[in-house]
Image (cartoon, rainbow, N blue to C red; front, side, top):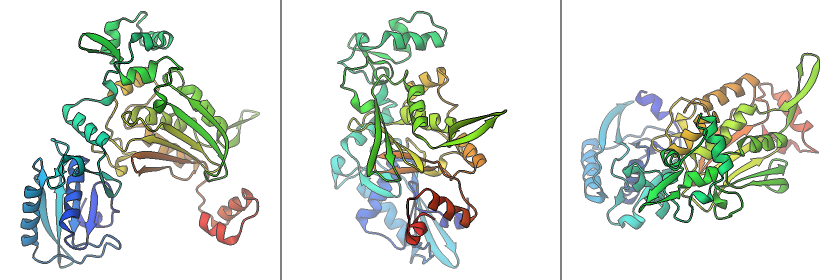
Length: 410
């Protein structure tokens, strides 16, 4: 990608524009956040609102100033790549930061507790203690899902669900060694305990202390959160409930008629594959260290929203979604889901969702990082190219609507 193309991009997890050299505090937050995440580029001399190229004065002096500031103020050491470009007769400065290998990085003057910053969308946020711990796990190559829960043993796992899984992969009888191999159990000081992943997928139902790992489906009337029509709760274990949850979502969705030979049948407007893939992605990629929130599935008249705790993992950015690139937060859960044919090859599912939506002429799905959560929005409305048909559709689904309200929905 050349520099001109980059200047037409929106600010994101990996890109930030500044008209001029920002305050010392702001530039350090951005540098640290890039290093703690997917890396990124800070471009100086370009307005962040209208992308007007204003340039910087004395770029070589500014380059030295930034390099010294980072060296003196950030720990562990970050080595930036700083480049000067002349665009339209004006100098701009690009500060490139690679994803760090010694996370968490922090601003020395603020210390580890308050000086760690992470990138959420196009903003910098102070990292919570949970995020700092997650960054430390990333450096050690340890996943939270494989941590043992000392309150859960093999007796807290559902034997029937375990048998179904192992039978599906050709193992008639499972042993403790097999459970350890699949990271359903883990040894700790000589004893074996269920891992987070093991209990989320195979734990006995009704024990109640893993409510955070469950799934809630809510059907709302209209297009807002104002009126709840119906709600369903699905606690752990999740491995046996994926198809049930999918069918419940389909039940709540808008339907369309189609012909199968001479028979007229009914199906959800949103393709079943898109529903299941989005649900499975939420389960296998959510951050299970965030114990205060469960996966929430909200069904509105015009869309389906699936909200899971945790932002994109590793070096991924929103712009990478659907390109075939993928990184995996919960490798043990992914491995089990793939063995049970509950998910596509990593990186291919979203691309297929986008293709199915395009083939049906539906509005394009959206993928959003919102705070510490990741949201998938699957519209269940046609993408109108004809404005008259669009207006007619809005009027038909509304019980009285003003012209100003129609304009807002266009």
